Image (tube, rainbow, N blue to C red):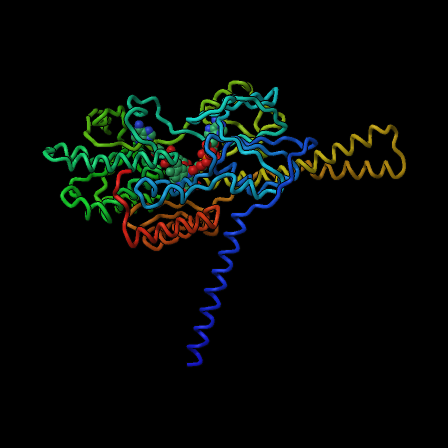
Length: 500
Ligand code: FAD
Ligand code: NAI
C-alpha cells in the first residue's frame, strides 16, 4: 500500500510539474517582451524568405547587432516534411506553420517583417525592390530598400520543364495552398464518381490518382493517399473504394535515387503490397484535362485516363534568382543555382550578399537539413561580422589620430590582432544526419550515418522514429502540441472527408 501511495504521489507530482512547465513555456511564447527599437547607427540586414534557411537564421541571430528586416510573400514558416500529411487531412494546415512574428517578436531588437515578394535585387546599389502581391493592397504596394547585408533565402519553385498542361491541370506539393488544393480536388474526384449514373469506366478514371516524380515528395504523398484510402475512405465510400487506383510515374529506372538500394527495394515491395503502381523509365509528356500522356521505356507514347495529377518533379530557380544571376554574369554561371563560397557569400558581391538553401548550387542536396544548418551557421557568421565591423571602426578612429605611440600603438596592435582572428571565420561544414521518408502503411525508411558506414532501416519502428524525429524538429511547443493532437485525433476519429 505504501508503495502504491508513493507511485501515486510521484505520478501526481510529475503530471502537475509537466503541466506547470507546459503552461509556463506556452505563456512565455505568447507574451513577448519589450524590444529595442531600430538603431540608425547599426547596419541593416535584410533577409529574403521565411523558409528553412531564413527561419533557422532568425532563430539564432543576435539582433542587438543589426536592424533586421525580413521580406517574404508568406508571413510564416512552413514545415515542409509534413506537407503531404496536410494533403490528405491527417494534419491541420495551421499545425505545421509558425508565424514569423512568433519568432521575431522574441528577439532583443525589433525585427521588421514585411509580407512581400522581392522583385529585384541590385547587388551594386545594394538595394532590394519588393512588392505586396497579396489580394488586398494599400496605397503603397511596391518600394525599394537599401541594405548593408542581404541574406538571400528565397528557395526554389516546382520544375515543370514547360511540359504542356502541367501548370493548368496538375496540383503541386510545395506550398500550403498546394496541399489544400490536392485535398479538395481528391474529394471532388470522389464525389463526382459518386454522382448517380456514372459509368464504371468513368468512375475508374475519376478515381485514378497519378503522382509524377519518384523523389521523396512523390513517394510520401502516394503513401499518405494510400493510408487515407485504407483507413478512412473504405468506410465512407464503400461502393467506390475498390475503384481507387494510385500510380506513381518516374522517368528514371528507380524511385528514391538518394536512398540505398535495399530501401528502394523495400519501398517498391511496400508499394506493391499497397497496390500502388510504380511506372519507372516512364516520362510524362503532357497533362490533359482528363488524362496524361506518357512515354514508356520502349519509346512509345500512350494516354492514361485519370481524375487528378499531383506533380512532384523537382525544383527549379525562381525568376528573381535568375534575374540576380543575370546581373553577375561573370560569377553566376551555374544553371543549377547561385554560386556561393565556403562562407555562403554570393560570388561577385564582395561579401555583402549571402545565399543559402534551395536557391544555391552547392555540393549538397536541396534539403531542409542543409538549409537549416546553413541558417544557423550564418547566425554565427553575422555575430563575427558585427565584431569585425566594430573593431574596424575602432581601428579607423584610432588611426585617424595620426602617428600612434606608446599605449595607443599597443591598442592598435591589439585591435589588428583581434581583427585578424575574427577575419578567420570558420567555413560552412554540413553534417548529414540521415535521410528519412514515410512510405505509407505505417512504414518509413531511414538511411542513417552509422560510424564510417550507413544504417539502412525500414518498417513500423522506423515509422515511429520518423514521427518522433519530425515532432522534435518542429520549431515550437505550439506546433508540436498541434501536430501530436492531430495525430491523436486521426487515431480516434479518422480523417475528415468534408470538402470545404
Ligand atoms: P524554402 O523553405 O522553400 O523557403 C523559401 C522562402 O522564400 C519561403 O518563405 C518563400 O515564401 C520565400 N520567397 C519565395 N519567393 C520570394 C521572393 N521573391 N522574395 C522573398 N521571399 C520569397 N527536406 C528535408 O531535409 N527533409 C524532408 O523531410 C523534406 N520534406 C519535404 C517535403 C516536401 C513536400 C517538400 C516540398 C520539400 C521537402 N524537403 C525536405 C525539402 C525542403 O523543404 C527544402 O529543401 C527547404 O525548404 C529549403 O529551404 P529554403 O529556405 O532554401 O527554401
Ligand atoms: P526530386 O528532384 O527528388 O524528384 C523528382 C523526380 O521526378 C525525379 O526522380 C525525376 O526523375 C522525376 N521526373 C522529373 N520529370 C519527370 C517527368 N516528366 N516524368 C516522370 N518523372 C519525372 O524532387 P522532390 O521529391 O520534390 O524533392 C526535392 C528535394 O527535396 C530533394 O532534394 C529531396 O531530397 C528533398 N525532399 C526530401 C524529403 C525527405 O527527406 N523525406 C521529402 C521531400 C523532399
